[in-house]
Length: 113
Length: 113
Image 1 (cartoon, rainbow over the protein chains, first blue to last red):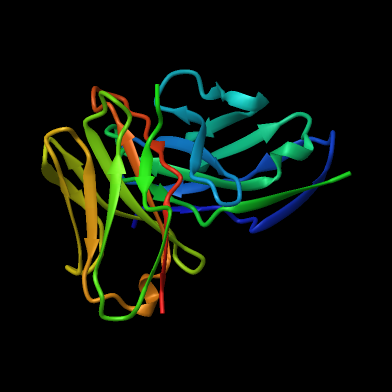
Image 2 (cartoon, rainbow over the protein chains, first blue to last red):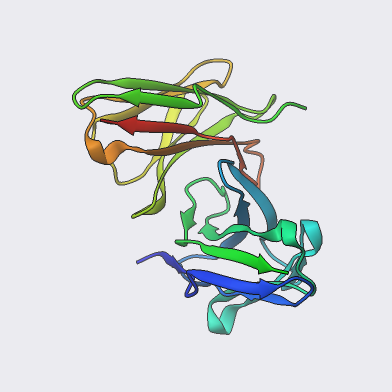
């Protein structure tokens, strides 16, 4: 079955520390991978996406993610977290059309000072 | 360019009623998808419309339906509301020209009493 797993429900990181959010997927076809962020009361904002090519992709707000096919993973990273990064982060997988996305359950990021 | 807009933003209904939610995609976008977000089930794909035709459908009962108009605006309808239909309903639009990115609206929060 197609699925996305985000093992960490909640993560707390100190401001200025590095961040890694984990994402594992199960998908029968070539996966198209996405990370979205959702602030309270808001819709989803795309951070970055992987369709093909270089397995390390850069996104907005200083985020990057690495696609590892052998591990079926697409982990999100940021070298230095800011208080404004506190939000819920969703990993998603879809086909080339990118419409019927399958989302993970999300990871809530808290940032401590 | 204006983003995806959804109306209304908040809605309270009672069990057994029906509800219609509206979504206006980004100008030029032809594909509109709907998602339901609940604390228990997370983000789940409802359906996708393109050129006034339903192109893809998630695993939801027939009480959930939608349509798309010639200007790409979309509506979704839920009949015979149940308490479990309380959720944030998100609409997303995309160009549909190849490797796609979906842009999400702020959502409509529906509370069923």
